[in-house]
Amino acid sequence: MSNYVYPRFPYACSAEQRSGTTRRHPVVVIGAGPIGLTAALDLAARGQPVVVLDDNDTVSIGSRAVCYAKRPLEIWDRLGCAAAMVEKGVSWNIGKVFFRDQLSYQFDLLPEPGHRWPAMINLQQYHLEEILVDACTKSPLVDLRWKHRLVSLKQFDDHADLAVETPDGIFTMEAQWVIACDGANSDTRRMVGSEFKGQFFQDRFLIADVRMKADFPTERWFWFDPPFHPGQSVLLHRQSDNIWRIDFQLGWDADPDEEKKPERVIPRIRAMLGESTDFELEWVSIYQFACRRIDQFRRGRVLFAGDAAHQVSPFGARGANTGVQDIDNLAWKLALVLRGEAPESLVDSYHDERAYAADDNILNSTRATDFITPKTRLSRHFRDAVLDLAQHHAFARPLVNSGRLSTPTPYVASSLNTPDRT
Image (cartoon, rainbow, N blue to C red):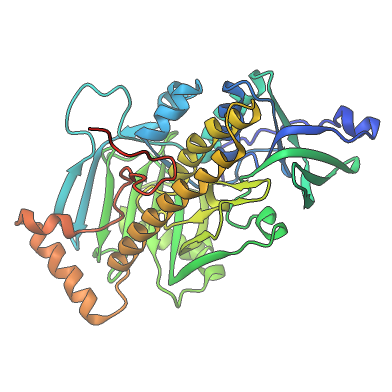
């Protein structure tokens, strides 16, 4: 049972719906998750009015994304939100990897002093969204519309027609540009006829968010083949409000419906934490690894960002963090085009650069998945040998892959690159 009280944001019938007139907006964002809210704030910071449509009236259910890196914090700082996130979140920079019951090695994401922002913060997605929603409601250029569901989209040369369903019925609005941030199951992607290309991995993981007071340090702990969950892997992260995220690898044969039941989850946690530890379940979910992306990040007047554009495994903090960087790449380009200060072709560089970054993330995420869940006896022997050697030999540690955390992707083939001058 969750102790978090979900806010309810008020629905309001817009003036254009009441009047029955069709209004054209410069930008309409679909989805008020972290990526859509960031898009609205970034465009507003550049003087562009934005309408955000969301079919719900609250923040995301469950903690969902929890790890946010320094680069997105820098972007959110530019938008006036990072300080509140860091204050509410849990900062960390040390990660430890265990093989069975032994420490294999540890790493430090911020080994030198003097950085303004932590290497990582852990913060439940609902807290992060509340901070972003608050910033949007304070902006006179952001129009957040709750209980507004996009039901159809038609594209023309210079705009898109959007049919939107509300508690007061369906009405039509127009947008010069649409930014689709409606997640991995994006309806917008289906409406424009785009599909994901990539792969699902035949393994399942259990997420258990647990409320407890524990003396674990604020570090990322990852186990391969631990005695409390033999043959599989486990990840432990601390979040705010005494919530701990635990990921249990289950294997492909696990029944998702059965494994979510408390009578299945609680014994796994007891085996890990000990019989004397008091805890309560906050949220439970089952997920399957996927590494895939959309074919084109731009489809006419529609631009895709975040999980609507690409999916990676959660190990490595490449999901939401990458989506925020999508917006950082897109917003300034779109603002220049809307102001008439750049040709529309500038927007095409968004696909050039962010599809390239997505492919880099997918490559690294696929490698991590193959290491965490080896598919053959030979690959498992290799993984176990690497973990064993890493305890005593530095040369083996770079080979350990429990989800390598994101590093910058250079846009080596960007259409915006110019020749070096001597």
